[in-house]
Image (cartoon, rainbow, N blue to C red; front, top):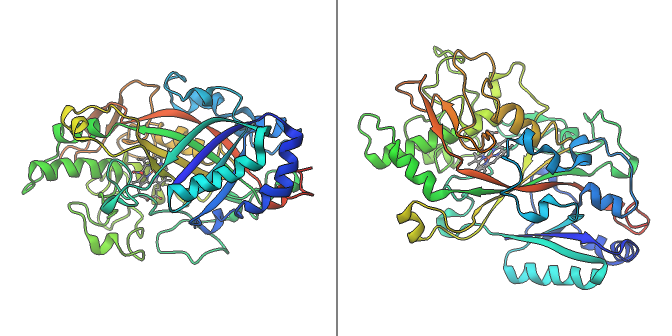
Length: 422
Ligand code: N7H
């Protein structure tokens, strides 16, 4: 489980003192580059308002971070901030503790320890409790799809699996090889985090799949519904890529890390720019990682994702009424060295850009899962393999409740002699 504890710094002197003396050695070194998150760990990030509160006015070289996420409402396709969690619309969120633990008791004990040290130097603004889903839904998000399969591979840090895009460490880490932006020395080694609370309308999504089921020869109604969902994601619920197995999930592929990401959308005898019989151009995974749709392969606009579901399981009353009555969704978190090249780029220039991927005979329309049209219905094309030019008009199954951008400093900057604790 993971707790996101968003706070305001109300006494900078006391906060810095505690940071240097007691907090910094509780912070886990960023393991972003290895793609592995520890089981029980504390991470600490600051918004630009938080850095200002600490008297740090250095330009970190990321304009989105400096302006704050509220400034990107229109670029992200949000319909204003009416649906946003109120705290995210203010300038009072200065920092976040992300506490990851195996049990809620462990998480609350750790959070309590941090709060005891910091006392009245901080004030809680908002807390989001996020949990892995139970039983066989572990690692699956609320729509039921397995998440966290495809990540970029950081050159020099990891052994890459087949199909992973190899990126320079500087795509994720400030000042690392491949990051050409000028950064203050103390910030090098840190990373920018885009946090988004994305509500998911699960009963509505399931009802839509049922109503628009794509019944291929031999399919039942339920298989047709499942198929449309898979077409919208580009993977079956178990993670099998449609590009490798277009008509049915195949656990032997899904469970094999050597195979489950090893595809490019290219097939001999098939036209990359017109054939959507395997994976639609508008599917979530093709919009957010176009692979061979861009030549040479894009190695710049990548993110390391570390999202986790929040909110309870769907109740039977919600399923029966086809209506969401409780808040649930994805606590989306992505790491990158430049938000406008990472999260924001993917949302604005790929998911929301109807003509992306480029060079196609037919426009893709919006990313069928996260494409956002400021609250207005969105059209996605190519979802029905029997009529690939047909568009489907989709309501928002994912609704933004806002978020914030954070800088996660290197631990050295938090220690007594570091920039933030001084
Ligand atoms: Fe997505 N999901 O949890 O069901 N995502 N995502 N995402 N996403 C992916 O490969 C999901 C969101 C990316 O390399 C999978 O891990 C949901 C945003 C990228 O092939 C699944 C939401 C952004 C990839 C989901 C959501 C991205 C990716 C397939 C919102 C960026 C890798 C499994 C509620 C702006 C693509 C996997 C690749 C994959 C889910 C949001 C980006 C199942 C439900 C906002 C880069």
